[in-house]
Length: 481
Image (tube, rainbow, N blue to C red; front, side, top):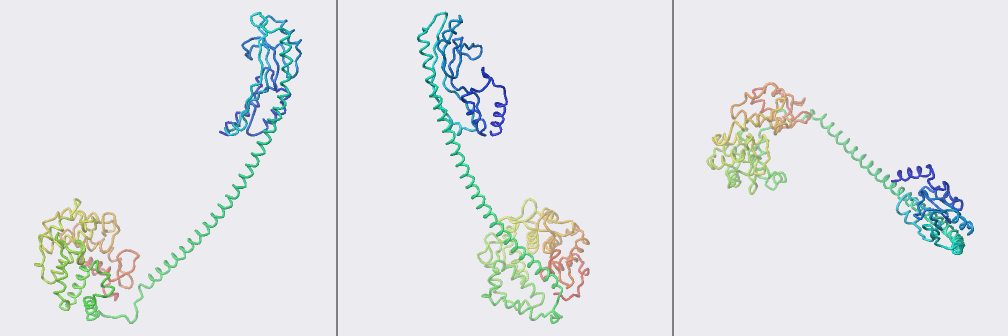
């Protein structure tokens, strides 16, 4: 909008004066120059006030003939002579001061608007008939100059108004700029404080990150360090007593905090004791009662009493009962129905009613059904199709299609393929090589590249290599475990 105003002002002031006179009236020339020097105004037309005697009663500027014109006093004799010298219609007119001003915006226009209607217009001759006598004409002419002092007073008032307006505008602008300066100073101070705080926080984060990174690197460097006084052989008796202690310390913090996976924990302990031929040390009746207490109406088993049934803990319950040769304690049809209800159209299995999908659950379903002899209740081909879809370019398996290869997932997927006699779907050498790369200098194995070794991952990797018949590919004499 401002650009349009500036363009219009430039075109108006640089253009040709279209008035009949072709220039400013001298009495108001200084005022017009002053107004046009202001950035927010320019004049479009003006008249300082005048007396005119002209032909053409329609009073149109174009085509009319001025007989007498003056911006000051006028002689009545001149008017009478002008009337007598023409045979056209003649009009006598007095115009007061006129000034058209264009403003930059509406607010300035409202502040500048001034209206006045002081004027006089009388036809002297119309259709060859004299409408006003010479005496009356002289009287009208003598009245006109008396209006000129009003013009002077009006111009003085206008000048005073403009000066006051501009002074007020200047004061407003000064105050506005002062306020703006104060706001900017405050804003910059706040911004500086925010930036300082942000940089301090960033510095603290970076320091903490570097400390963590250093700790990880130190830990990684130390993973190969085995204490000199570490046992050189497996302490079987101590190991068995350690496991047995968990059966008795039911108020122990670790025992309480592992309630959410109790069923699987019991199976892991029992399988370890069975491998060490120490199973009789465990309280069989108490364990079987615990398994029975976790049986749910839908045929599944939960991790602990009053927990939800899940495929993981259903398999663990079945495995516990198989270890104790007590498979007759379960309702095989109900367990089979629970497992089959969790298979999805793509062959995958939900872990429970909440809908999580994982290749581990495929193994749990197939292993449990194999142990109870109910493989026929599911679509085995679709189940294997899903397992194969979890295979990656490196030969390993992830939790679902596209997921990172992981030793735990590999064990589950290999177990599923082995149970169903479908190991021909994999590249055994490629997968075995990936598994062998999990062994570190200490002899321990990790579950993924760039991870530390631990006993859990060592089990997943070695068990998977055993299924593939490739255990001899790793260094079996290392003393990590």
